[in-house]
Length: 262
Image (cartoon, rainbow, N blue to C red; front, side, top):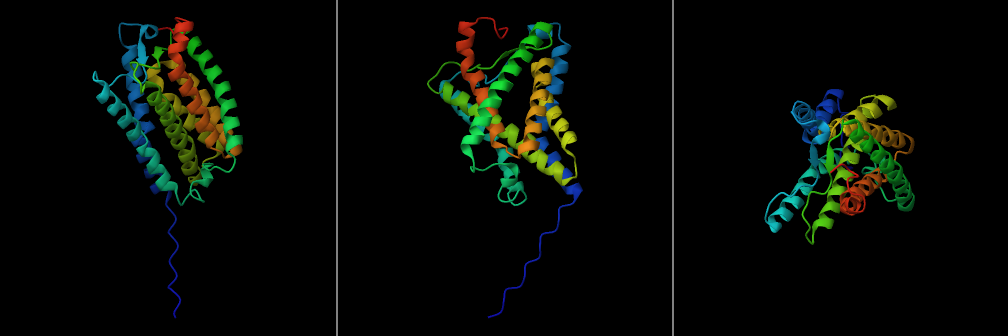
């Protein structure tokens, strides 16, 4: 029996093709969000109302009828995760073995969970300080993180929204972007700064304080990823921060009225 003919090795991807892929992925995800946020901050700053007197609502109600509000919420979360599926498919054989290069595996779940929880506490406290400082300086809008009305499904949807943010932002802005910029020969700090700058830019609609806070968060996350190669702690930390803000805001607003400037 004859041996099967050897299969040719796949040709290396050219730098031009990688750049095109990166621009397409960003155009379908946070690059597009960054452009909209730039327009949004220009719009806000050119209004007659001061930036500090404006409000940005996260997780708003999408329909007056409860069932359709729920459907739209779930559909929005699912659609936002499609670019994550795209980058996982693009890197499935590149980040060998099967995304292991990104630090997405369950080899050490307790250590990842512990690091993620500690990171959430540090970044969450720092983010609150930056937000309150921005509010005091008048450069940050009042952020309402839980615009949904109270239903039986409100908390599950808010937790799904937090998971969506943690997964999509860290997988795309850290894992994917780091992998592809590394393939293009970029060094550590230029990669950290570009990723952090994009992260800050797509939060500009919340004002300059949120831009600064998210740039700092991106620098910390990027530096940690460059040292450990682990993405799961970043996803866990991001989820915990957003879950605490989304779900805990109504309680915080009741206990400490006016804390977030609303």
